[in-house]
Length: 226
Length: 226
Image (cartoon, rainbow over all chains, first blue to last red; front, side, top):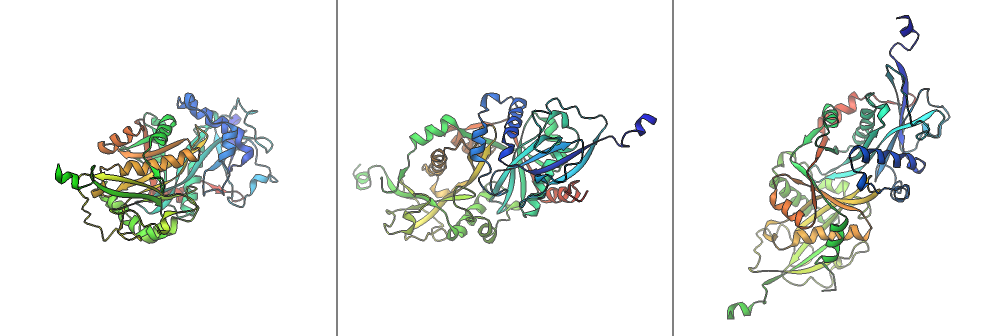
C-alpha cells in the first residue's frame, strides 16, 4: 500500500493529444499505414509511399476532403509553447489516461514527434461521404490505428469520438466505416460505441486491371465522335 | 422480314447522354433517390429533401467532392444547340442504344428534361475516397440508378463506365461501391464489369442517436479545459 501511494493514486498518467495532421507528419502516417497492412495481412497490396501520400493529402482545407487526426502521447504535460496547441481549423483535444504499469514503447525513437518528449501513438484518416437517402454528408473513417503498446487505454475511442464530434458540429448525418468480418475485437469496440453493423451490405471494388480494361473496352463515345 | 426491314435494322434507337448534373436537376435527382429507397425498402429512412440536396450538392467543383452524372435519353438526336452539350469540367458522352420494342415511359412528363423531347433516365452519385493502402484517391459510387423502363439496355454500365473513365483520367486507384447481399442482379452486373466482391468486410454505421450520445458522453476535453 505504501509503495502504491508513492505513485499517482490511479496509475501512471499518459498525456494524450489529438490534432490535425500536416505534411510533416507523413513519415509517421506512412509507417502507421504499413502497420495496418501487416495487421490485416494486406502487405501484398501496400503501395502507399511517402510521396504518393504527399501528393494527395493536405491539398484541400481539412474536413472538405481527406483529413487526418494524429494522436500523440507524452509522459509529461504537452509543452505550452508548442505550435501544435492551436490551429485555425481545429482546436486540439487533450486528455489524460492512466495505466497501471508505465508504457514501454520500443519504437519511441521512430515515432518521436516534433514536440519534445512527445510520441505519435496513432491516427485516423477520414473524409466526407454523402448519403443520398439522408440527403446529407457524413464522414467515412478509412483507417484508424493506435500503436500496439498504447492500446486498451481508450485512445481508439478518443480518436473516433473526435471524428464524431466534428461530424455533429458540422451537422453531418452519419459516421461510417468498414470492418473485417472476423475482427471481433473491432466489431465489439464499434458496437459499444453504438455503431450498427450493416450485415447485408457487400463492398465491391474495381481496381487495377479491371479499371483499365473497362476504360479501354468501354463503349462510350464522347459527344461528336459518334 | 419485310416489316422488320421497315424499321432500323437493329431495333429502335434511343439516344443516351451522360452529363454533369447541376442545381436545376435536383427535383429529378430527389425523385430518383426516392425510387432507390422504395427498391431497397428503406423508405422509413428516406429524409432527403430538395432543399437538403441543394444545401449540400454542387458547392465544390465536380470530382473534388460530391458529384452527380445525369443520364438522359431521347428518341431523337439531342438538340445541337443544347447548353448541355458542353461543359468546362466534363464533356458529355453520347451513345445510341437499340431496343427491339420502342420504350414506353409512363413517367415521361415527370422526368422531362430542359432539352426538348429529352427525359432523365437515371443518375450516378459519387465522390472521392482515399485508400491508405494504395496511398491514392479513388471514387466511391454512393448511388446508381436507371429508371425501370430504361433497364437492360447497357445504360447502367454506361453510367458506371463514365465514373471509371473519370477515375482513370485522374490516375485514381479504385472505384468502390456497396451492394445489398441478396441483390444477385446487381452483384452479377458488377462482377461482369470486373468488380471484386470483398465478402469479408462489413459496413458499420454511427447515425442518429448513437452520434448524439457519443457526442454528449464523450470524455474529450478541449485543450485548456482540463
